[in-house]
Length: 273
Length: 106
Image 1 (cartoon, chains in turn red, brown):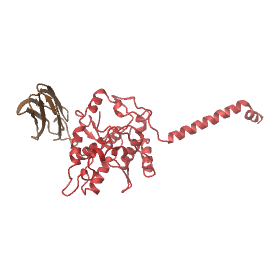
Image 2: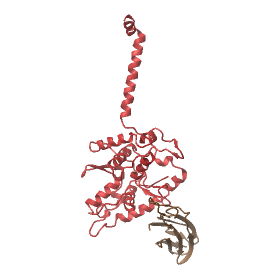
Image 3: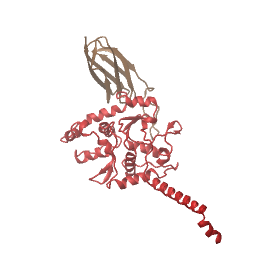
Image 4: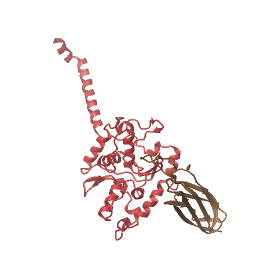
């Protein structure tokens, strides 16, 4: 007893208490920081992790194979989808003017349905609502072509995703999904793309996982694919069940990724391995 | 078949010009199987012919060793204004065609 009262009053104990309080505060700060969403520092586009041949392919607008899909999209832009229906150009005019910057604001919450939509989803909504036509199938050449063409109009512009009351819930679900372990490998996105980017995973350099180049041409696919397809490939990689195209969890992840990419520029149409 | 060709719009007579063509095609090798285990038949672009004002300037025979969405580039001499015509055919008999105009000065 006497010992205890002595220790509480001594200068040594006071110093120890200060250290303990400082330590507790730093732990609290650490927990608070961990609870807040983080961006990798510094932000690096996926192209920075690619080899010289891939960079050359993306940099040359003719040899970039994704341009073949874009050419299709450019044609579709001014083609009426059905007799009597307006083409995209019929309402939006020149894509170079009307679609400039559009891709920097997606995914966003669609006011009509209160659901998150990405650029592909938005194009399909436009087909249903304004062109009275059936939506394109996911990963069809038509949908990828049009999406690539629309996103291309924002090439070089920084992403501009802000979190507001409309999309906050979806954003938080996406962020939580990003940190939740899944699959037989029991890994979350964060384990590769936040903690180990820049390091090797067998023959590959792990990127920061930004989707700024999508729709992109992947050599593995020998075709252009959407960001959803790429995220599904990650699910496959960790041996988890792949959500179907258009699943809310994919869209919410896309939204989180778009926020996480900060002000990285749109690169569509990108080339990746 | 979607394709893109690139030929300079203008050139001086006698100038060496680059001609490029990219064609969207799966270039199925015939060695792959679908999810049900059935072989996917070979289907590649087997020949490509380029004519310049009707005269053949480039011909290529392609096989299953060429990757999907083939891209070819060659050089030729700009001789006269006119048209370059690109024609190709795959194993299914599907034909593709593109044209490009060039104006030669001097």
